[in-house]
Length: 396
View 1 (tube, rainbow, N blue to C red):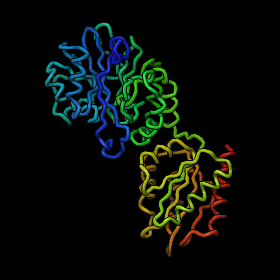
View 2: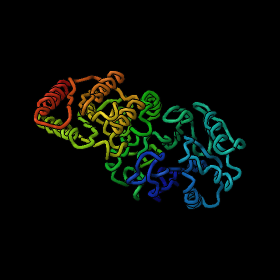
View 3: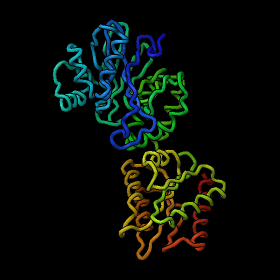
């Protein structure tokens, strides 16, 4: 069996992108990304999703390599984001008889993005498509992470085509399935992908998970990252915990510092936490850190400590940016502590306190506020903050 045959009659025709620097023009791609597409081959052929249009010729080459001159009868669109849909027009030119299958919101977007409104078939929850020997059924998963999103199920192969759900950053370096590669390199990329792309939509993800668990898939074909077979339990558990905003025990310290004084407070708190026995500690300098990595760790761990100086009577901009990203993702259930500094008029500590009230997080202890430069006098309040955090973590 060729490596591209995921299950009998199901074949991988996706591509790797190791050129694009930022996903959605926002999130770094140090390890690239894959755009996954799949053929389901019965008496008739269905293509599940396409790829970013810059890689469309590779998609067409991959399709021909798998089925030769056979036509593609159906294009099933699980998700309309252009990294998966922008080859639709080219595909229609090559296969003019192809029928485009999607739900009502999908087909509206096909018209809006690509001006296509003919040769389409609308499907609703639970509808089926008989390919002759293999069947596809369709299940809506709105807001995971666009409103038109759905998943496609092939019961004969117990295979779920899940759209962006269960995806990861990172190109596929050879192997396609989790049994053909080392899946450990993808877990942090899955967390980073979820936090950046899907993170706001915990409620819809929970509803989608219920549908997925009821189907009990043996293979999950996402549109990014490996095909999941051996690690499905871990994948579902990771998505379950992240969509409930359930953090692992650990502390993220995220700080901004103009001249190093606030940075010394962050280092002091980290050292004191370690002395209190906390082992999972991640420290990010927000002026230099990759925002996607900070968000990944905020989603992963249950305790967040944020600090920064006052800047123009407000929060230091990199700190304010982090708070906005967290707030827009509706992260819940975090313990929070904070610290800040100022030169002549303090605002950072007050504004960080207002943030935790808006988020309805647990404020663990009094903040630490420093005027002007770091000095030994600041060490004891930092130690108290760290001690109280560690005590609270041990209580749970």
